[in-house]
Amino acid sequence: MTIRPPRAPARVIKTSFGLEFSKIGASRYDLSDPYHLALTVRWPTFVAGVFAAYGVINLIFAGLYLAQPGCIANARPGSIGDAFFFSIETLATVGYGVMAPANLYGHVVVSAEIITGIAFTAIMTGLIFVRFSKAKAKIVYADVAVVTRHNGRPTLMFRIGNARASVMTQLRVEANALVGETTAEGGRFRRLQELPLARSSIPVFPMVLLLMHEIDEHSPFAGLDEQALAQSNMTIILSLEARDPQLAAMVYDMKAYFARDIRPGMRFVDAVSQQDGRTVADLRRISLIEPDEIGVSA
Picture 1 (cartoon, rainbow, N blue to C red):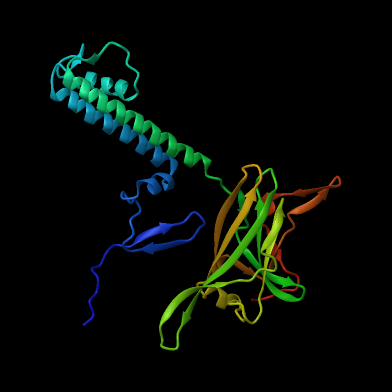
Picture 2 (cartoon, rainbow, N blue to C red):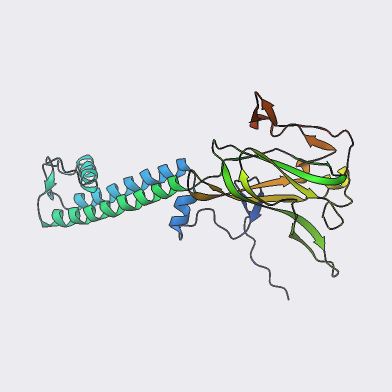
């Protein structure tokens, strides 16, 4: 007897590098891991969360002040406004001197709020610093990949560009294809197959770079014509890491290409030229392609 797990809705996961998939049993907002949550949500969500947490904390302490009338000197009896703004002043350790704790209960609540305010400020300062200090790779990618001939062999090519005004160093690139397979037992699964690149480690990355994978008999693209390639449902994932000397840090990035993004029989238009004796890279041309005069299929 086969026991099937209860059906649950699938959650769509959208990655920053273009790959989408669904997961069942994965939560987008995992409250049990608040640190990861605070660092991965978008900036508008993060800012809204900070203000919401700040408001909730002040409302809680305002309720505590209202629980015992007369614990705040110079506050109007039962005024939620006075209690709320006194809580804000206390949480920020400002203390304008107009309202103040009037008895032991008030002093105890104020002391607890001051400690809470110090902890809240320290945590938010640390989170904001980490979010701002995360190094990002300013790498631009061609919208498509092409299959053309290089030294007489069909070659899959990707083009990337360094969008920083400085030179990146120690660039390392990995290319993997997510391909479907059927086992001898009839089982179907998808696995990552490495796509060897003509050069995967580059010491200096100043402008534009072509990444080339030769399509030989071991390549998952071997023997695929344009129609078969379009029906293959194949996905290519580029993984890059490089050192940004200006940030003195390693940066990482990823990009996904799908079968529909591969253009057999096309080649990239030159994006690097010589002007007045100087090499010029035009990153606006990084996605431009043109028909290959020879023509080639995967």
